[in-house]
Image: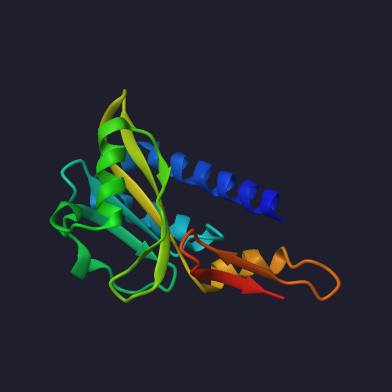
Length: 169
């Protein structure tokens, strides 16, 4: 089960790197990349949202699986917050190495884990792509349900702090 989860995380992280490497994403034109990221989030089978930031930390585009409006978030800057995401985003901008964050609480108090990847053009870091996995989210739950062990077994996926991210069985 652990290997299956690791394989899935490797697979989805490669998808994010592919999106971050697309030419339209590298140009960081929010309006032009919107359809690309909306298609991505529709078919990415574990992520709930995708955000694209420029190198100064400003959100330039976003898409959500539940298709909620995103315009009120445009222009927000992660540098204005002192939180887990901001710390990891700054590290990725600094060294260019993609990373899964530790779990943290969203503004709505849900546990999330983000995968953050640099948007680069000829080794020049232009911005970030960030995708979130929410605890108890329907997409994440589908993954766990596919891993359900036989014989009335169960899975509880916990973070380092003992928070339950998801369960099945």
